[in-house]
Amino acid sequence: MPFDIDMLKAHYESLPARVNAAKQALGRPLTLTEKILYAHLHADSPMQSYARGKDYVFFAPDRVAMQDATAQMALLQFMMCGRDKTAVPSTVHCDHLILAKEGANTDLKTAVDVNSEVYDFLSSVSNKYGIGFWKPGAGIIHQTVLENYAFPGGMMIGTDSHTPNAGGLGMLAIGVGGADAVDVMVGMAWELKMPKLIGVKLTGKLSGWTSPKDVILKVAGILTVKGGTGAIVEYFGEGAQAMSCTGKGTICNMGLKLGQQRLLLATMNPGAVTSALLSATM
Image (cartoon, rainbow, N blue to C red):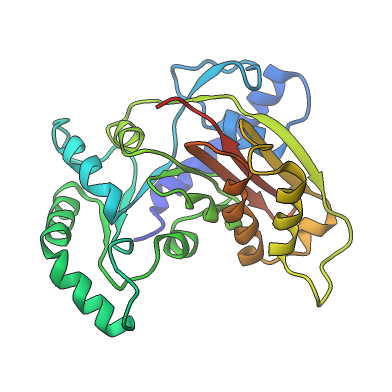
């Protein structure tokens, strides 16, 4: 079952209590981003107010996604941890090793032939440890995750820079390195500096001559390629409500261009859009 129904039930049953606890700890209303961040605090980080851009915090993401080029080392490291199964639902998506050259059918056949050893390894390891495996040709990781694993209010990390695409369905989706993915898969806390916040109010709605891509291009022109580093850019207002999920996903996906960083976040719900750029030393 792609949606890991037991995990989702547990998540939504406990979410209101976690958000209320965060409101009491901070003593004020919370933004969408803060609700998700504070609702995913790891047990090693007590519920309290954390300074944006200063305090390092431990988080507990709901799931992990990996693409075939980065999953190899991550799974090799995971195999040495002595676990029989991943601590959180995890998936592998075989799309990055397919070279677009001659056409879909020919390129897929070539990729399967050239990378057969890699695919066999990823498939066998995924089967052994209960990891979801999306074989070559099953789809691009960004869209596959959006359609099958993203859910409002959740937190996911992925070993791909465009993981934030899952923000189109209200998820805090974060691109990380393979070592961070392994930490979460074995049940350890994931450490991150509490990000700063930048708000963007969208009024009105898009006309027939514009698209959500124009929104993020405008924001990128204002903030430049490093103006969002270390911050989450949260969009709100009726303009955000008028967009489709795929349009919101585009804004989240391209939000990573606002900073030169190793970590990327994005999330959104029907009334808000959030994309974040976090700098980190790895």
